[in-house]
Image (cartoon, rainbow, N blue to C red; front, side, top):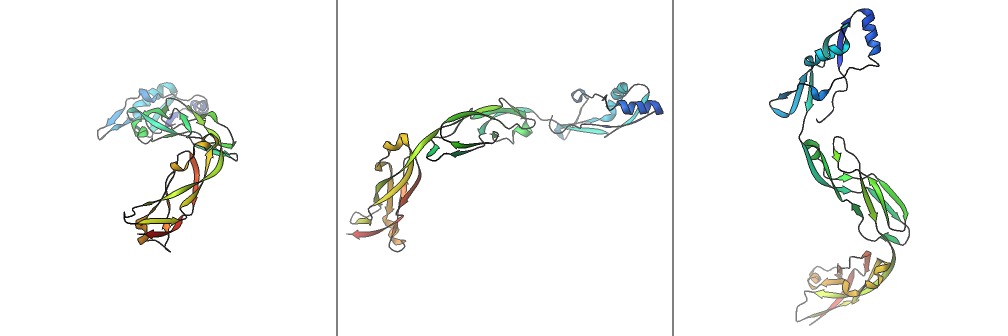
Length: 266
């Protein structure tokens, strides 16, 4: 069943003064019980997911609970409309809703890990079809300087069942250092009959890197280029330098200069 179920019905009743007054006061403590799923639903031919109940069909049931001294005249509303949907299951990714602030000289060592990274959700098709992901509760981590794992609750969604309510978040943290390296500039698309020299012939690349990877960095892992064909659109007779490749374990990469002078020799 999908959507809101009416929380109350309005009953028009009659009876003798004292009996009616007594029923009004006792109704505050003793509610009438109506089991919705036991009702005699009628389907709507044009929409198989919808059904209705005429409240006059439950009049006798409610009358028996009220006793012989009170007469139930009619019920408002006269019709109860319900939406039904088939139950389905699907697997959706879990998205951590987190913010991490690091102490100086510390950084994320690799990708944040969520276990499991996806969960099975089930519920009415009309709801499940709209779910593309499940988010965790929001968490903020301050002054982070070491790796850690923690539990995060999943944010529930009304009418949807989660196969689990929590996931494990693992955040790998590493100490880093700043460094630089000189990388020669490679000229592309130069005709065989010509040579091109750039000034300077190399660029200085600044980066930060985890201490464990510091000795792994070398100039061959970078590729800095200029394109000979760029001379036709160059500004101030300078060619633009592009950093075409860099190792995946270095971060915050910058380089200088971005443009270089050149001479062409035949």
